[in-house]
Length: 291
Image 1: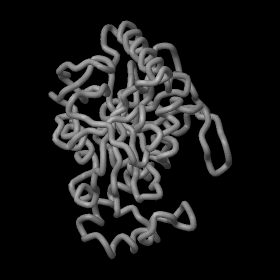
Image 2 (image 1 turned 45 degrees about the vertical axis):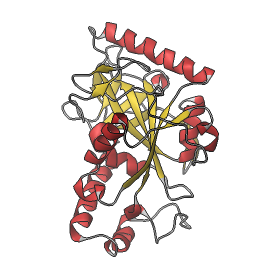
Image 3 (image 1 turned 30 degrees about the vertical axis):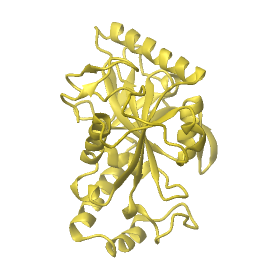
Image 4 (image 1 turned 30 degrees about the horizontal axis):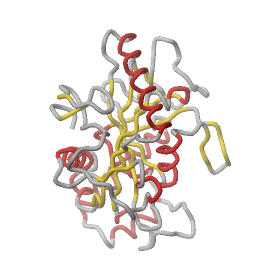
C-alpha cells in the first residue's frame, strides 16, 4: 500500500505520490452523503460515503486487508468507508493548522515532512469526538480520567493492531480512523520512557517503535491536533472478535485463553493460527511499551 498509489500533497488536492498516499478527504462526484448510518449527527455535515466503485474505496480496502493478513481478511468485512469533508469551521481550522505544520516540518527537515498514513482504532463515540472537536488531552482508563501523553497509531500495513484496539458498537461494527500523520524526524520510543510527553530534543518530531520497520507511530500530546489529520472512517465487521455471539458482554475484558476456545468453534485451523500469531505480536508490543 506504500508505493505508487494516488496521494495528496495537502488536504483537498490530488497528486501522484511516489512513496505513499491516499486520495484526498474532500468530496468528489462519485461519492454521496449517506444518512441514517451509525454516525447520524456527523453524516449531516461532515461525512461523505465512498462508493465501492470509486478508486479511493479500492485503494483503502486493499491497504486495510493487506494489514489484516490473508486468514483474518476472510473473516472481516468492510461495511462502509466515509471520508471527512472538514466542512465545519473548527474542522477547516484544524485542516489549515495541519497544512501549516506539514510545510513547517518539511522546511525543518530539508524539504521532506516524512508524512505517513496510520490507523487509529477506538470506540464510535471517541471517533465522533475526534471528528467534532479533535483529539482530547484526556483519556478514560480503568483508573479513571488521565492526561494523555501521546497518541499511538498503527502503521498502514498493521491495520490488525488497530482493529484489536477498536470497540464494537451496538450494531456489531468496529470503527477505525485512517489518518495522515506528520512524522518528521523520528526517534525510538520504548516502554521505559519515564513519563515522556514530548520529543526528547528539538531535533525530533515523533516517535516509533522501530526506525527501520515501525509498527507504531507515536505523536506527542502537544502535536496530536496539528500532526494528525483524520481523513477517513472505516467501519468493519470482525465476527472472529465477538464474545459469546453477542455485542454486549457483561464484562469489557475477556482473557485470551478463554476467548480462543470460543473462536475455535467458528474458525478453521489456519485462521486460528493466524489470529494467535497476530495477537501475540500485538501483546508483545503492548507489554514492551511499544504500542
